[in-house]
Length: 118
Length: 112
Image 1: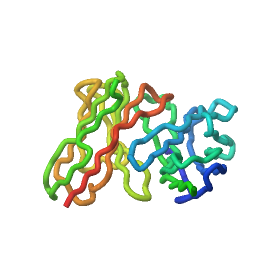
Image 2: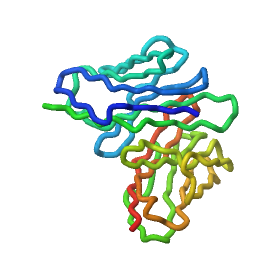
Image 3: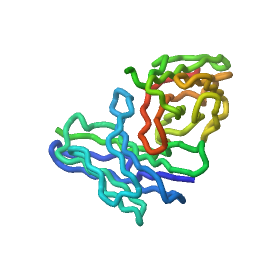
C-alpha cells in the first residue's frame, strides 16, 4: 500500500520569497505518478504540478517546481516569488500504475497550510 | 464543459436520516471516486469506480453506498447518517491512472 507523508502542518513565507514544502512517500510499485494539489479557502482542489516517476527531470510550472528524489522517495514543492494568492492548503498525492485493473486511487498526505506574509 | 459538478454544496442532516450526494462529469472519464476530507487527515477514499457498472470500496467505505449506472454519474448515498460522517466530501474523475484527478467543489455535510 502506498503512503504519503507531509511533516510540515504549517509553513509561512514572506511575499516574493521562496518556500519549499516537503513530501515523502512509500510505494512498492516501480511506475507511479506524484502530484501537488492546492486547496484555497474556496475549497476547490486545484492541480499545481505533476511528476512521472520514470522521468528524471524535475517538473516545473511557472513559479512552481519540484525536487524529485526517487531513491529517497522525496517529492518537495518549491514556490518561487511567493504571492498572496499562493496562500492555501497544499496536498501531496501519489498514484500507482498497477497491472491489476481497478485500483486507481490517489493517496493523499495530510496537507501543509501555507501562509503568505505581506 | 462544466467538469465535475457536485451537489449540494452544503447540507445539514439529523442523525439517522439518509441522503444522496450527486456527482456528474462531462469529460467522459472512466474513473470516478469519492473522498472525505477531515481536519488533519487529508483526503481519504470512500468508494471508486473504473467504469459504468463497476464499483469498489476504498479506505473508509462503511456507511456509504455507491452505484455507477452511467459514465457521467456517480452518486454517493448515506444510508443512516451519523455524527462521525460530518465532513467535507469530494467527488473526482480522471481519464486514467496517469492523469490527474479533477475535483468537484465539495460538499460540506454536518450531521447533528
